[in-house]
Length: 127
Image 1 (cartoon, rainbow, N blue to C red):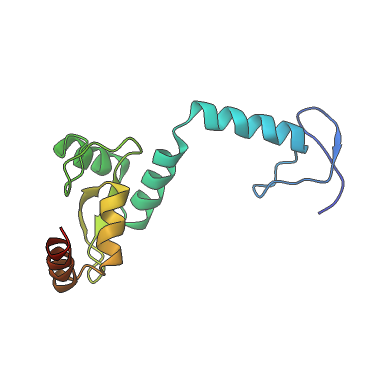
Image 2 (tube, helix red, strand yellow):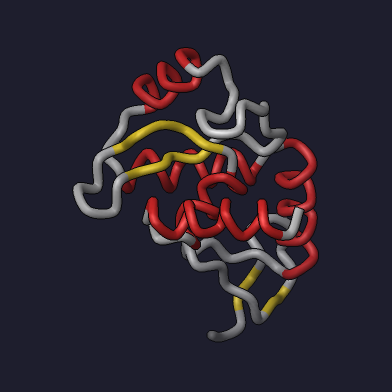
C-alpha cells in the first residue's frame, strides 16, 4: 500500500482496491453506496457463485428458475432474495433450486435422510 492519486477526484489517498483501481475512500464509498442501492447484489452474488461452481450457464440457471416458476423446490415459497443451487455433495450434481433456508437446513442435516426422520420425530414429540 502506498500513496495514490484518486482516478475520480484527483485527491491523494492511501487506498487501493483489490482490482487495482485507485480511488480515495470517499469516492469508493460513493461508488459502493450506489451499487448497493441499484443492485440486488445478494441475488446476483449467489447466482454468480452457484453458476460458476456447478458449471451452469446463465441460460441453464434461468431455465431452472422458469421451470420452478421462481419458487423453492422444497418449501414451495417464493424467496425475496432469489433461489440458490442445491446439489448432491457426493456427485456434485445439481438437484434443484431452493431458498437459502431450505438449502442450509439440508446442509445442516448433512443430506442424511435418517437425521431428517429423527428431526421429524423430535418435532412431533414436542408439538
